[in-house]
Image 1 (cartoon, rainbow, N blue to C red):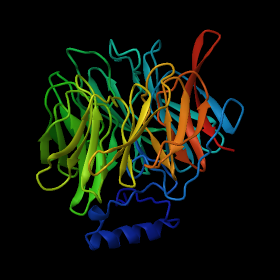
Image 2: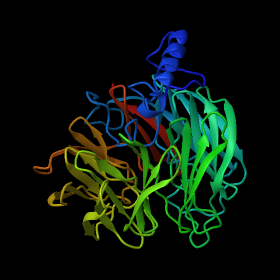
Image 3: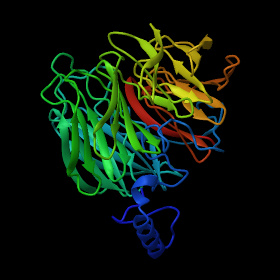
Length: 440
């Protein structure tokens, strides 16, 4: 957002001009309403990108085929382990990592053009959860940035903590957002933060003493609002939906679908549905007036819910398990890849199945979410195979199958005509993580 706090923008080279412009907008009452992102047009400032829909900007390009030693501009060995996806802000790449043996959780800062690891900034020493799912990590949430600061979310000392850093990796503040102390299942944390309107929003839902959605002030870390959620375990990240009436947060899980006012946390509507545990972020089609969700545990489903009117569930497909990964909505259609390795295309308005095709499950299932670049969809399996296929309802058309590494959980990040890809491989019996910039 353009803010009076330390105003910066990639569109304003002259700081005095930025101050004047921000003051003008505030005077017109537009600053809060426009929700202008401070990050530049080529940046990817948080989970699922600047639009929150996992769509690369219009006109963006990305390679279709690659492999070891082919079409890779650089690759950098990363310390520790994490599943967070790369975030691009100005000339930097940000992601998080954890060192279990050293009991640290850190922010990594890399040079965007060369891949040089510039800094590892430790946010926590000790306090890691005692148990997590073997497919999870202690650094799974993707960081968020407002273009001026970077906000890293870690589960530590039985709570969700947010640590703010400047763009050089220097810590600004740290705040306990809300507790996360699951009682029945100790699978670890998964929800990513989002930035909106000078706030950092975090969802932390469990069957422990605290469960809710919290907003912290991006400048100070002070809590601005908290909205309670059912005390049951679920993992979805809030989806930012920008509407004429203001920015809304969409959230599935805990047997309901709901929307909240992003500025106040007030629940705007909720509809029974979903299942207990979901991991995917909700997606939407504003023109069709529909939002889409998937899950989960104990029930597997894909559904559409109305954004307006009675907010009824318009259609539902049971038994299709797109659990950890999110769906992708584009051009009036919804695409998903199930844990089984089957890709689907549904018509968004009524759920009609347009096609389904087996991508191949390989080793493990799918944790990364589909990414749209132009008219192509990219999705990476846990075995580090990235499938590329056409975003077309007419028929499934495979464009490429790419292998780089042995394991991948993070979602691809587009930028600079490249794809930023976090993966791991086994080397001499040891697991080593990398970040690669795919694209010459």
